[in-house]
Picture 1 (cartoon, rainbow, N blue to C red):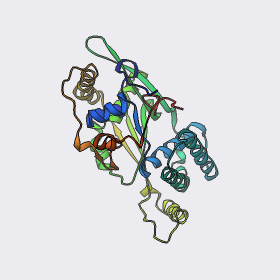
Picture 2 (picture 1 turned 180 degrees about the vertical axis):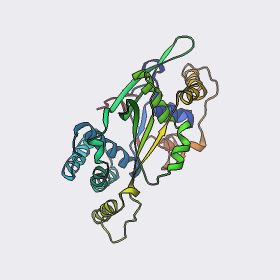
Picture 3 (picture 1 turned 45 degrees about the horizontal axis):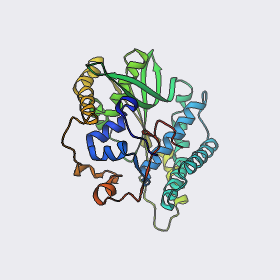
Picture 4 (picture 1 turned 30 degrees about the vertical axis):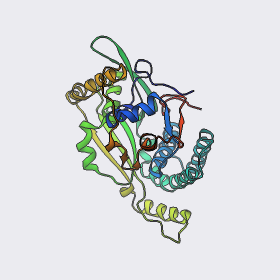
Length: 320
């Protein structure tokens, strides 16, 4: 039996809002009917595994960063968890995950050495913490806003959001220019303010560049990974960057009034069936990672690569 989304019970996440903005038909299939794709991409797999290992490292270690041995062990632990959660995974999915495991073993030792001060000097408030704050409509109805923050720390008694990003390309200027319209960042800062009754100072983007070196035709992935590892130690400033952005109360209130309030009204109207027209967005069928996860169901009525989720937000709730 699949889970069916309910605004008043389940609320919204940044992923739900982004899906709603992109294509309401994909949102209906994914959240109302509960369909999820079995397929993944190398970039998505790397990011998910990297986030899991960073969460464990920042949650467990203080005084010194984890060493390469711990990273290797934790990567295997996360791989075993993934196996249990995906008992019907296809062979290509295993291959993608195996490459992610090897890639995290490759790049993270240099990362932890480069940012060793995270474990000696930062005042962490929480790591990988889920949140649930209430959004109240003008008529008094309330809906949850939910999510999971990578981390929160204090500097000079001010709260900072810590967000991990795994990217192939780092556009610092784009990150800075996009803060005012970045959905995830602003939603999490909004929640942070509500939870702590304190205006956060801003966000520290912790960006890890996925190696862009090309694997040679005659080169095994293990040899390729070794070459990538040498490059991360040779050029740590190239692979590990941090972009700090501040936010003011005026900017946050402006975002809430001009974006959050209108989109929450639109989501409610859609949920309550007040909007008569419903259609898919052709432009959302192709993403920067390739075809949308709902391409098959929408274009060919093909659900063979999909399954029904047991929970609405699998990134927040235990599905297995």
